[in-house]
Length: 297
Image 1: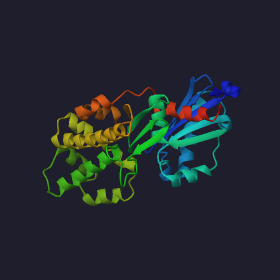
Image 2: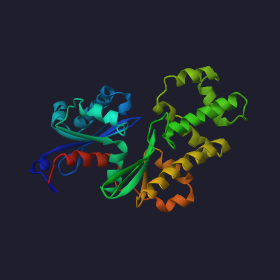
Image 3: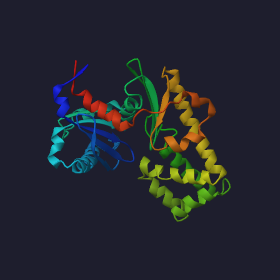
Image 4: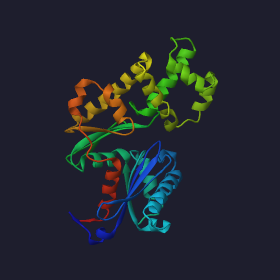
């Protein structure tokens, strides 16, 4: 493959859109980072209008940081890894949605993360952030596990951990099991009223649930047994995703996402030999997607 001559002066934008936030990285043709930006959640399940509002807000920050005018957005070659794009419905909607860039290629967030983690070589990743999923690139084929959304899947994720912690707190409040410091802290956050949690949950997003995940880690650091048990179950869920990708032929699996580092000490010993360090982050993978639009045979 040969890079087009115009690639030397092109500007590339990598976009990492997830359930808790959107990050962008602006690079010149030589790969130098010249600007970055952050904005709100950019999961396509929240609606494409919101996704592009957040992308453009983050891109405006990156352009300003690079000292470029806002209308330079029309000259950018953008690549995006977006949560929600594992669904054909979402990909079809995005294909006809107007974008502000010179070129735009979007894939599921896990695909972009896997590209970055292994530099385009064979390998797998398990994303453990607000949501979770596993993906492996093996011999040019894409293999996925989980990632079917918060309602039915996303095991091992920050959102699932937060929801389980809230469930535990309610169970303790009702006297079904004994009280714990973590449960009391959560109930105090909701004025010790179960109905307040119920009303909150009616409109809560996965990102809202994930805000309670750090509370579980903090309680576990204080050797609180119930919190340690919650993290043990979360780690076991992640381990099963890793093992599934290895079974599909991945030579190694990298953990990526906001929970990848804090959950590491809790993972079962038997999966540690299956883990590899990510070479690059998901934004690097998104830049690879952007550059692929200017590659000539």
